[in-house]
Length: 319
Image 1 (tube, helix red, strand yellow):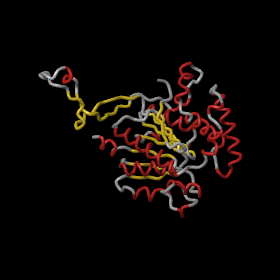
Image 2 (tube, rainbow, N blue to C red):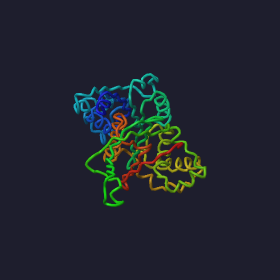
Image 3 (spheres, helix red, strand yellow):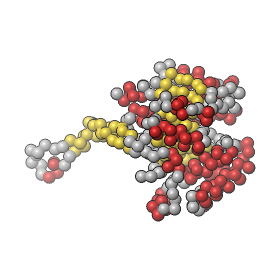
Image 4 (spheres, rainbow, N blue to C red):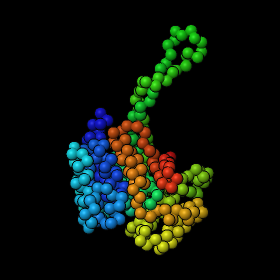
């Protein structure tokens, strides 16, 4: 049943950079029904570095189309389609033909628009990006996402035992498992990014909050302001701008700018292949889990820090 769900699912993947290529590979190998690769960008020298679906000879071609042949060869059972349009130009109806939508390299406004549209129509939404050594993933699986989890079976003792009180305790049998039905609830991306840090509760939880969440806000604002991500070619100017945006973002959230110290700046340029592999692995796995409705989903952010080599899952938004 679970594999049937996955085999019947159509997925939209926007953005065929290094992270997009990893997610595409993982979804095609997992065996979804159909995958649409949507990207209007052209192959550049930069995009060849972390993107293994694009042949080196394809510079100047459309990224989705250039990725199609290698992507399709991974699994002939999956219908892979390349779409060279701009995602911003797509009407609402376009998104409604999919069971899950995965957005990489998109602007904050666009992600919020698509997420709000899809949550109204019960379509699962995933967002992700890689910035240098850092990467993140967000998911919104709706107000009530049902799934099953495999748990070790608890064997109740029979009442006849004379071994005293110890024997009456239930035992866990590691060889037998049982399926437990569960439900998880998610919020929209807009709500997740709009946490009020002035409330007492939020202030109290600030020490436990991964700074990656604030770093993400800074990098999304950079993308909104510049229409691109920090570029190694304009390192001095972009570093200056990142510092400025960091100050503005934290001030707008009524937080101290020393929450995010300057050393993040030199580590968030360009997509790094190993970070794409880790984040793309988690993102692909989350899409597969959500579509097959099996195992507990990451609720609702996953952050990866390649400098420390660790990842964290944390929930942001109204509880």
